[in-house]
Length: 313
Image (cartoon, rainbow, N blue to C red):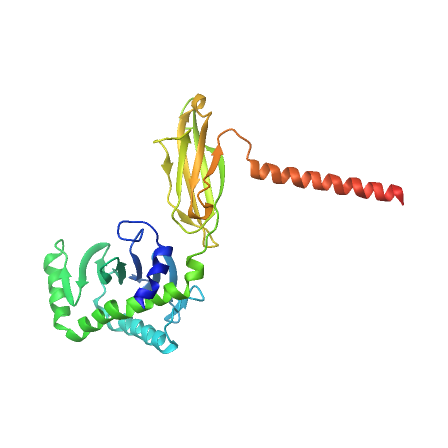
């Protein structure tokens, strides 16, 4: 099945020395904290940087955020996973210490297949991790972490079940997600871009802001340019999600007011088909301007025609 999906994986995650821009992965994050005299379990599932699942705190069930979030697993397999999480939360509650977080999943590395991983942190600090069927302790909490590993390593049933989940269940589920969600994951949405000025950073200076929004997939290249020369002072914010599943990014450049002329924001994205989006500072925002002009002209024509017909008849 992996061999059949390699072309799909290459299309979804292009580039990179390993064949993919980033390793294809699915992971579950669980945070447990003590609030109002009770334990609260927060959980989520992620395909790369896309959240696909959420844990329902009240009902203790999995919430599937997309129609394809079930992958190709049967209802029985999904119910078994749900019961496994419920059992884990109830059986291990006495071991929690104020705040515990674990991250577990699997990554597909080109030429190496899937590699499973699990990491546990307490109070925000790395505590233990698992590789294959062996528990490894943190050097920062050496004694306590080693004691915990010794106990877990003695529990062969637990380590074997964990290894099976990471080495078999997780890869099968990840491949099922990629196959079921390929139409969503492969969609190409062109970005929209506009320019604005930010708060002045000093006397005689301008903060130029380039906004890029509504694009999918996430990888995008945005840079302030002067001709073909990249402006090294370009500052880029984090790529943030929009409500519709697309992405937003802003890039700023601090310049002297007299040097703003001739600068442009250039956007590269896979949806543009190699035709970069270029916006020049000081030029009218052509797309919005032409749309407004077209609306005004259309209204004027309709008004004129209406007046002519009334006069004629």
